[in-house]
Image (cartoon, rainbow, N blue to C red; front, side, top):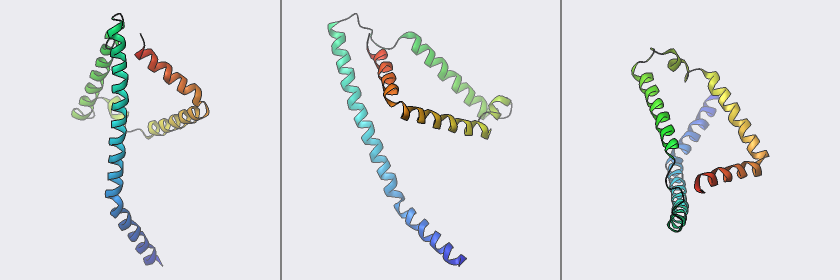
Length: 140
């Protein structure tokens, strides 16, 4: 009886391993399709914004300097934390404890589930906020 169960599990593992290439190719095709669609949409939005800018030179072009500076500082802090964590392992307890405490992951999963439930329940408001955020970036 146990041997039959093990044989069934082996057969399932072989069947799944044979499908692995097709699963990977499907994922790659979906990823490439997504990237092409996003690039076409982004190109359309940038051309529209550039046309508006040509007729009204008063429109803001590029990103605000404050956004660039904040992003650069944040990126530098992340790089420093990663370098310190992996090259001087154990020297800084906050860097050693943070990623390994399982409570952080479990709490994060709970927060994400609550966020998704909220978004599903209030999808119109959520998409209105997303639209507002995009317009704040693209509109003058």
